[in-house]
Length: 337
Image 1 (cartoon, rainbow, N blue to C red):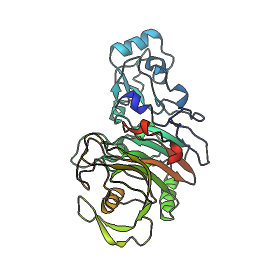
Image 2: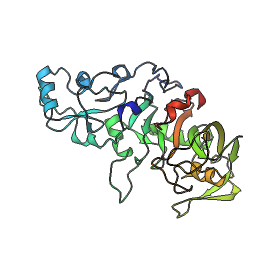
Image 3: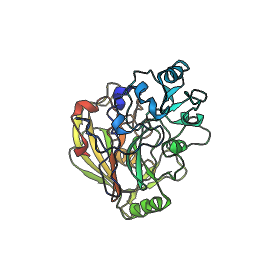
Image 4: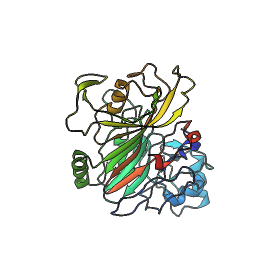
């Protein structure tokens, strides 16, 4: 994923103990007050610096010769991948050195395990001691899956919050992009579940669906996920209301060039406590499958146009726009989600 696309994500900020907006405005790039960055995580005030200038995070006090040795050894990594010294860093990215690539003190700056951070995963909001949000690109696992290779977001929480409690409290399907919520204490993890059960957690998704949607509607069918790769939407309504999906049209859009669909609509989907594949299955059952969904729709695409845009609960709020190539041209911002 290139730098230009990831520049659209929201840098992190922090206000202790109060609800907050975690997104930088995609149009202006403005950010709120900067938090203290743990370890080698790039803080917001350092965003836009050249990578060689940002090396102080992992080589504090190192001179030019030590930094040069690190470059020549190919030891400098950003989110686990080597980058040129002229690369402009982004808030939330993790800078590390390969083992043995340290500077004048011989320190590697971090252990070799930090290279498990999947490409594009970064912090987009944090409220100290309570909650944080990570951005997960499509194609990255939320959790490790038995029998499948590759790193997951869950495995790498210790990179972002070393030596601290950090637990994922929501999950996204492999092809779905967007926000993953991280509880930063055992008590907050329990409270998040309590808030979900009271419909006090709001999750807002952006989706591009096939067909023309002109009016808002609600999908209320219960989800039957027992022993099925694809879940089934039942005729009976989900009794608690916690797993209903509210769908609101935003914009008629042209389908992606690879799609055979004649028309498509950008919609906002709102849920409180999700079930596996809930939004995808509900939209397909309503006759509007998500663009690129080969499991519930007619055609698989290079990406699934479903993105968890905003997470809101009493103590915390975070938002980040999708990385879809068409997004910038639609002229939408955080106020639309």
